[in-house]
Image (cartoon, rainbow, N blue to C red; front, side, top):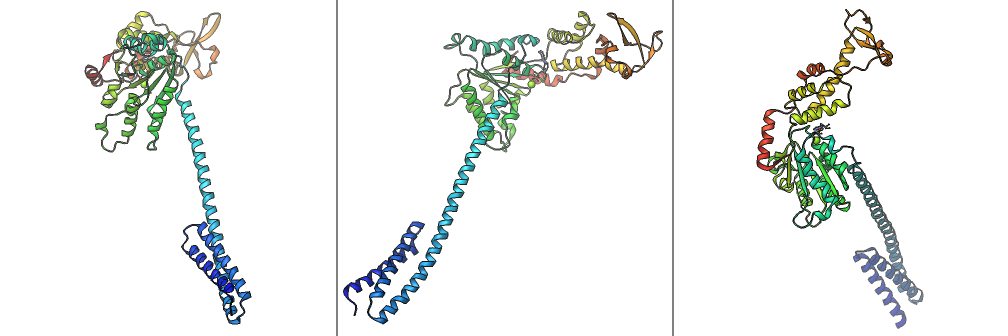
Length: 432
Ligand SMILES: Nc1ncnc2c1ncn2[C@@H]1O[C@H](COP(=O)(O)OP(=O)(O)O)[C@@H](O)[C@H]1O
Ligand SMILES: [Mg+2]
């Protein structure tokens, strides 16, 4: 017969096993299952004790059978718990890996950002105000906006606030980018130059971030100028870009930063340049308080441009010939004129290349070859490629060279285009 103590031991074992098993089965976490396992193990140990003390063979046998069965279950549970533990560890490792990956990503992003900073802060360029022909009004406005406020901040207090947005617009090749470069040379602050291509990323959301960073950078290094060339491609008109407008976010971000919402844009000037002022979104247009028309060069400016360029090239043009040329080049932009002069400067080389006869003439105690006609008594039949460079007289550009290239160097801006700029100026702009 079993004693009360023995009976108690049996009940205790049964309770522990029951509790442990249900904790294990119902437990939702590893820890609870583990607790259940431990309870059941204690229960089995208890049952083993009981079995040893039970005088009745039948009861003892029964307890042993039960205990064997429970041990089997415990073994299964233990295996499961082990694999569960491994699984949890794996997951934790994965999370750790992910964290590391994220961290690497963050570092990479930072590196990219630093690279971007390197791209956008350009070294000072060597363009001076004097290098720019004409455009006096534009230069004056830029000096007011760029040079004076930085040099004499005390003068720009109260209602005399410096401009915060200036747009240079006009036909291509008239010196808008050139003017901005002069600002970079002459201003004493940070000059950040970006093209829309730098800012527009193919990844959605990246462009907005770039713009945000751009302005943050400018604010942190103020006084500063942000120069956005070809600003139209960044801030094009909402209506004309249609519903599939993936620039919308970019424009909104630009507008937000431009307005300085939630941040101080004090001493940050946005300088924009565009050939397509009418393509600019009206809200952004308004933020460019000053809109300066950079027109085609007039007669005086063309003369100035020609004179400047020819100063660097060997030529024999008289002042009158330069004036005549300036007259002929009505409708040509600054870069058209540069191209024409470059083309004319090749003209003598073309003539030399085609020439079959050269003659030697004395130039500063040296005999050098120049082109001549076959009928010249001193003519030698020789091709350019057979003449050494030191023996060749560097040819001067002559007026005829210009006349020769003029028919193929057409102005790049049409009358129609010009009317569009004039119309827009009447509506929104001011003469530069
Ligand atoms: N007013 C000017 N004075 C001096 N150079 C000029 C002027 N206008 C145009 N140029 C010449 O033409 C080139 C192109 O001008 P750029 O400023 O790039 O034109 P855009 O107005 O299209 O930005 C310049 O590099 C410069 O050499
Ligand atoms: Mg330009």
